[in-house]
Figure 1 (cartoon, rainbow, N blue to C red):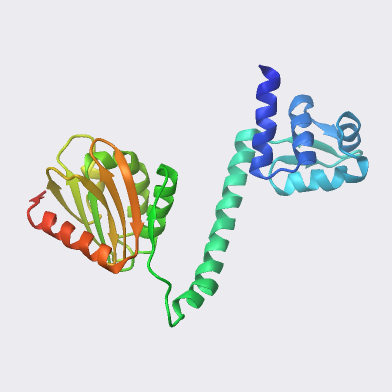
Figure 2 (spheres, one colour; figure 1 turned 120 degrees about the vertical axis):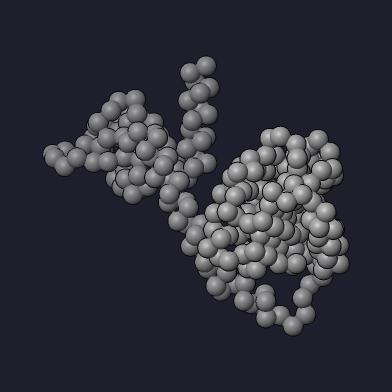
Length: 250
């Protein structure tokens, strides 16, 4: 069991972004504590010609620290601390990617005289749906129409953090929730106008009358669709408006 757990940990470190040599060096430091570069090289398969490059990289990535002296000694940081440092570094990297894509690549797409045919995607799995949901809500500029029947409860944890910036961004938000227990209506207070509606077969989000994420089903989501097809988005918006007009004000 210990060997299995150790192998799983090695695979995880590789997935996080550590190289094979970095993984071996860090795992060795966790077992032995403070030690020198030569000792790490002698007791692992990391070549001495590579050991300082490996340790310097681990230090930059936030997984180890050094203490000056002769010889210099290396200490492992706690996995919790190292993982948090990695998370922050990845979040900053993603922000840089997003800025580059939006500032440089998106304008190239928007300037095309002939746009490709509109898309209709069937999303396979909750993670794909949440990722698309975050993108849709994050890019909203003027209006969001949101329907949250009881079947959308698995998505609520993803919805709520996205709403925090809507008020500051002056995005007009209409939220229709199911009467069934389980949805935290109080958490939606202050985000936008909230109404209660019975018998919603499906739910979803419509952004700027431009794109829609539709969640269909009864007790749980059975079909999740994203589209920027103008006809489909208009139909979804008109249907939402019909339900909204007859919903109960909170």
